[in-house]
Amino acid sequence: MNQISITVALGTDHAGFPLKQPIIELLESLGHRVLDFGCHSTDACDYPDYIRPAAQAIPEGKADCAIVLGGSGNGEAIVANKVPGVRCGLCWDEWSAEMTKIHNHANCIAIGARPVPETLALKIVRTWLSASADTNGRHQRRVDKIET
Image 1 (cartoon, rainbow, N blue to C red):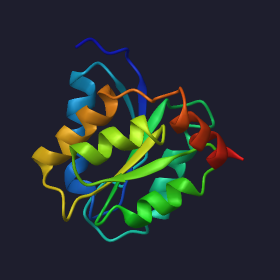
Image 2 (image 1 turned 60 degrees about the horizontal axis):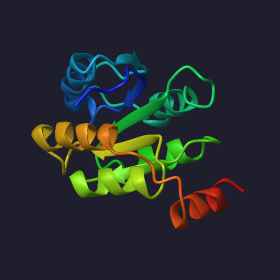
Image 3 (image 1 turned 90 degrees about the vertical axis):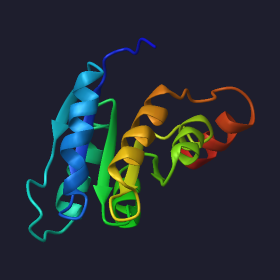
């Protein structure tokens, strides 16, 4: 499958840090550009400091989409969704990744590194990137209601 090269913003906290490099390597192997907003170690940190700038890269036009990582992914999704124009879905498997793109037109996903092993996280990223938003009918109508 040929994909168009995109720019992906990436933000993580200390708990999500172990998934960061494998995801960067996957994205780069697919020909995508990565904007790394940190963090840069497993030292405890405050996730909003890294997640918000990664999410903001989308409406600022610096990135096409974003991936945010944390322990559960919940806090990261909440922070990302506070940024106007960002629709972040929490993904725990390939099905949730596909559905959040098709149904919710997610331009950001959150993955929890504690419940999601590396192999599955990489499958989630691939699935999300390869899915297409359903821009016709009921899903578009619902996304339009999110944006108002």
